[in-house]
Image (cartoon, rainbow over all chains, first blue to last red; front, side):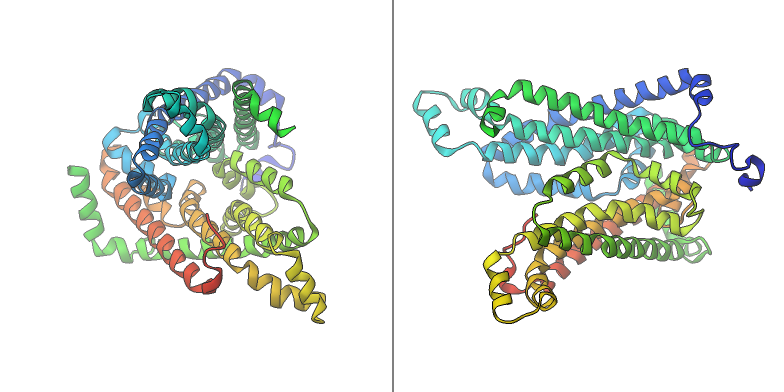
Length: 227
Length: 229
């Protein structure tokens, strides 16, 4: 149907005039996307890192924590949104809560792996120097686990950027996903779909590169060791 | 509470199960789409993974492939593919899901073959096995734990992602949720939305458990601790 209405050239995959005419809409969706991603990953990290420390301190809690985060992660994204929407409404909160639940497992697992990799003699040396358990954690173990934590943050960020788009099906809060979905529904507007999809991928790569830069700056010793 | 009650009511209506767009039909669509997607993914990923694993080091390439697919939203792939030469309907959905099934299948096939002790390969050749025999009788059996791990991850992931096919009206259990969200006013559809969520989650967890069981049965006892993930 649509091919008859538009012809081969009427509905291009990319069009500057679309970008130009809809700049404010695109910008709003992009900002929305960034805001949702940053909030989700930040909240997830604020929950996940203490959880990982708890699992590290109390080994018997490691399995239950990882298992329950794993079950949350197995729930399909659409189902998770559908579970939350009737209780939290169809606004941004629902999307953020769902994304936090997803990012949780990735960050907990990587933080725990990072903490476990702290060599035993380093830990002993810190104790022998008179560090309390908390001081040892904040001054020795967490800094040494930082590469692992940051890998977790990077993975969580990239997958969150992609997952935000699923929120479009709940209501108006899929950010760039909303553009993709409405482009599809409005006579398969290819330029809108492709522009939003490209921006999603670009955003994921840019945020990943920023975090990579942060991780390089925070952990200069890993670079020295690698070279 | 009323949403939960509405969910129970929706699930208890036999017509919602047996209608032409009822749960049973949607479940069947969901499984068919998922099985085809994993099948196509494996057809592409396994030969390439095994080939790369035998050739030598390609871990960099595989990391790049999995990172790039992580960054591409499934929703974008699902909306873009039907507008290409593939056309609307099931094939586009299957291809979109197959693309996301490839990274775990590829990475595990690669690792499974790559990790085989070179001496094992040499002794297989030394015993007079041809290249093909060494591959099918020695290397592939040794790679089974990894192949099974990759298959399990891919199946569970595809079952979960197939729910998004409803984005493009592609069928599957996701349609139940999408239809529920389409109700006006929204509160009216919440029972159906929750019912769809429960069904999809139950399917995902069930398949995950079944695949874990199958993986255990498939893996020879002496290789059971070899593959972890």
